[in-house]
Image (cartoon, rainbow, N blue to C red; front, side):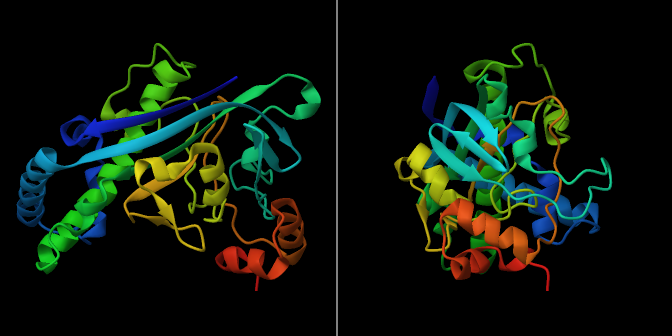
Length: 273
């Protein structure tokens, strides 16, 4: 059983989900004066009002029957190879892989996995091209709106579309603190560092339908885009893969069906030196 759904949101619908701490971090204003932060925030709110008249954000989500097989997740008929820590996790003492949070095929019972991508209207990032301040403000807001879209989309998935947490009632602060069941690991982040996994996600979701295109390395355009997996396991948690050795690189290249030099290129920042 599979479900794929395309969602679009008005800016005012996703604005409440913006994590302003990351917005200020992008401006290197974490410890600046309250006056400076307020001025920037006021400018951001004014730009959001303008965005709300001209732009929308978009997401596409798929929920698929899935199982794990070794360090792979097989969802919707696609094999999504995962990496595994080679240094024990400081919290659990185990060497974790995201595949650990999906029921193994050997159990004989299907699990479910969500796959998603979220983005903004393409022109949003470049709507102040002749104004350096306006351009940076638009870009940092677009980044936050893409993440906010993923946050709102994930809430809808948990409570309605997948519905594994129908009674969830969390504040936005609790959402930002990830107080919900399950995780939403994003491509390019510590537990899913290979951006070329976006090519597999595209096979499942056809992300071009919401305006996302992929570079030769799997990076998304618009830049203000986010993609990844949604895992419902109650013990699922975020972690960093860290550095991997040549043995795992070779195994990963085999499971991805990639030439070793190309896999090495995709994982260059994750390799032990």
